[in-house]
Image 1 (tube, one colour):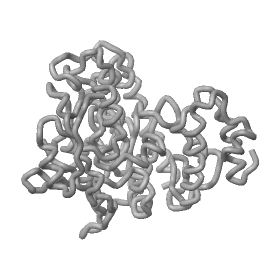
Image 2 (image 1 turned 45 degrees about the horizontal axis):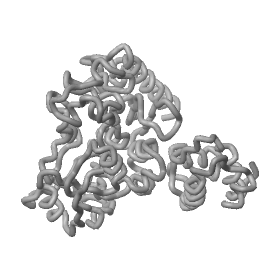
Image 3 (image 1 turned 135 degrees about the vertical axis):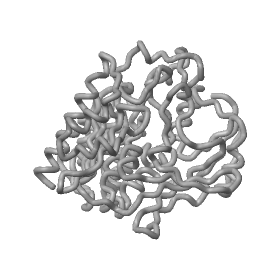
Image 4 (image 1 turned 90 degrees about the vertical axis):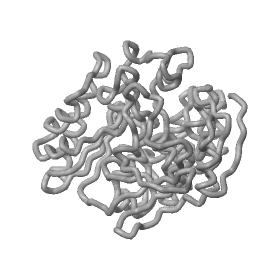
Length: 317
Length: 83
């Protein structure tokens, strides 16, 4: 690990100002950042600890939604009675992620900001455009079984690993932030994560120093809410494919996929085809897919996983 | 819990044992407090003190010796259920 300096921020704005400097990073739960620092994949020169900021509350919004503080731990969010009752998809997605110990530490904002688990990103001996911009992509032409089938580029085919973000995408969450100059904004989750293009090291819409203060859910949409995660072992593993779905009794609904793309993969036009069945939806979601021999199974797996959800939803609305 | 691990031989090399025991104690408290898990069927109800719940909640603790079945027997004894 490289040496770094450390400070505890006292206000969100102060944190944003401190983190604007080159080489500075926020630290909250540290469940991803510390691992990456030990491997020297992340090499911050200054850490701004945001744990002391009072951003750990879950509160109702004026229009019937829920404002989730950036520092609310994954365990607490999944267990919140309002989330379990009205945003079941979010609870299910959170509980499908990581392990109990990690969920106890990991925060809502940190979950959105976690880095990819592409094996080449984790191997400092191999070129990786995300880790070292311009060095090349070892994954393309390498071992691609776990990697993206859609949304990737010639520079990067890494997936976004978050389960929670898939649920947030399906629920139309907004990410609220504060900038170093004190201004605030709300970023729709659809625009929060970026596709890699030729700058895969830029992963979100956040600007230098910009701090996530909360994630806001709109008022509950009801429906049957399911998160189905398919992986190589039953627990404590990342998704090969995951499907977050909200299915209404008339057959309409929403679908977001994890494990297949550099960001939670949802297309509102595709999900309009939900009443016609899983194949109609995934056919559109994967229209631009460029799978490899090793990960082409994900396209079929996503269709079958969504199909299983729809079958179950019809049997037990 | 320590005594139950000894009684049920819930380890071989012992490397993971302190973590297994700490997680076992904390995990049982979480079940008692109603914290849900991936295998909790009804998220509006309290989770059951079942083997499936224990296994899921202990999945973050890896044991390379593979003492899992004996660890589960120790946990179930402490949880007041016979293995």
